[in-house]
Length: 199
Image (cartoon, rainbow, N blue to C red; front, side, top):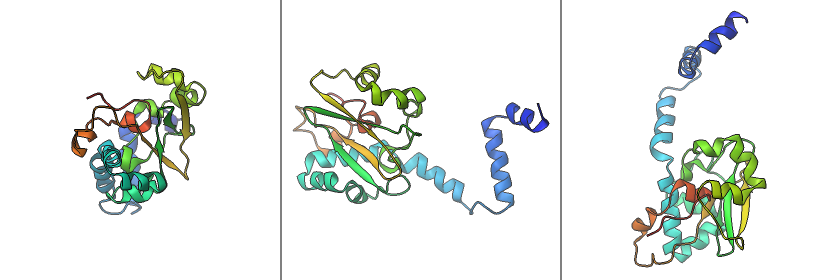
C-alpha cells in the first residue's frame, strides 16, 4: 500500500473534510461565510415541516391545492421554499385507489427545501433498488401495509423533477386547524412511504 492510501484509510471522514476545507480555503476557493451559510440552510431551513405546511395548506385551501397540483414550484415559492433541489417541484396526489411513492434510483436526491435532507434509509441501495420492483413489499417492511386494490405508483426523481407526495387528508380531521394538520405530516409521509398520523 502506498503512503497516501494508508494515510487516507486511517483518517476519519471528519479529518478528510477538514483537510479538504483547508486546501480549498488556502486557495481562496471557498467564499467567506459559505460553509456557515450552507450549514444554516441545511440544519434550519430545509425541513420537512415546510412540506407539512404545504400539504396542510392544500388540504384546507382548494385554490392553493389546485396551484400545487398545477405548478408545485410556484406553490412552494409562496412560502419561500426555493433553492437547490427545489427548482422543479411536482406534487403527486394520492387517491383512494393510488398511493404515490418517491425514490431516486440513481443517488438520493429529494426536494430539499420542502422535504429536508433525505433520511438514511432513502439513500440506501436496498431501498433504491427494490422499491421500483417490490413497492408493496418495501412499504410493508417500512410499516405501511396497503390493501391489494390500491395501486402503488413509484416516481423516480431526476435532475428535471423533484417530487412531493400530497397524501389524502385523514377522515375525522375536519375540525383541525391548518397548524394542527401539519403535525400529522412527517418526512416519510411526504416521501410516500407512510400515511398521515392518526388523530
